[in-house]
Image 1: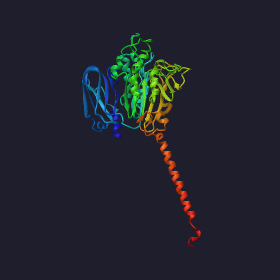
Image 2: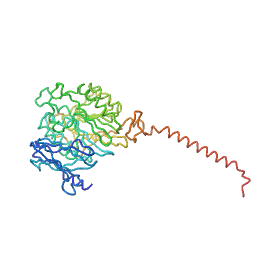
Image 3: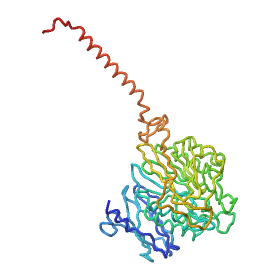
Image 4: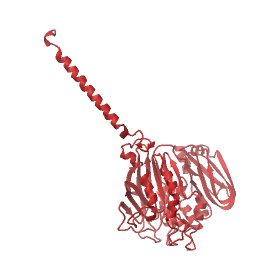
Length: 465
């Protein structure tokens, strides 16, 4: 362990004078046995990725594996395979045009079992009066210091416009956070926000070039599923160029069948992340187009829903399921409505932070903590935020990964499910246990009665003195 920690100390961010065109590597699609290394370089050139376990790299000061990318392009996405589960790897990207532009970085493959922690963020975008180094920078720096985080769920709006320069600013400010942690992105409305101000959505070119992932996808980590949904419909005219394409009926219907398949599983739990939320403080009821998804969330086993879009923190309880809005990564702040919908539990605004979630499959539980690193005094201003000496926990909730198992008393049962409830749960064994207990008691009583009868039947006068 000490060797691994020493190796991590050697991992430093990209050279500061080159970040505009050279975006330091970031990791996506990590599984137990693979991961994708992504980066942008300032030339249409080839490159090599060298890598090794962090333990090997620390002991030998070299890499023992490498893979070449012969694509002559600025954007690269290289898949590493044949990795070991739950293992730290150190890697180095070396563009052939400038082999020393990047420094070694690290990631950890996913575990096969056991509890773990992940982070949820959304809306790190710049404002009309400030850049990301004024707000998001502090959130990313705090996340970079979080110990043993397995991955980051990002809910969208990485930049206010579909603009190369602003995306470069995002990766520059996220550099420390992404130097040792995998990111799983979700697309937001501002990814389609046309820099020209046109009502025709842009093609989200910077998002696709950066992440190269589908608009909706899922992945599993140690028996828990994560579903990323697309809430933006670029085929519809942008009703407000400052907002982006709408959360339309068509975009919901187009993913409904796929979402049902993803939710209908036999895993410990399932989380969803989507940019625009089903429930939000500025609507007194469910968001109108979200009905089909909402029905599926309660038909199947949803552990919790994560979203962004509203630039504040909000938590709801809908039929016992927690819904979180975590739009606190740095976008301009939004006021909270005085008349939120039923189910609204708590909320805050003008705060900078992220959600930290720990899942414990054996206990059928997850604990979410809203972490605040500081606050601002104005919604959209070029002010320097007040940053706390150390992040603080503003809200905490523990909830079941599988509410049906919790209701039946089977919090420690395995993930195998049937249509009648959890297989092997204590609730299913209860009648048998009660019957066995009654039999044991009856046998004991009968045995005691026979013993006393034998004692009483003996004649005391026949005893020897």
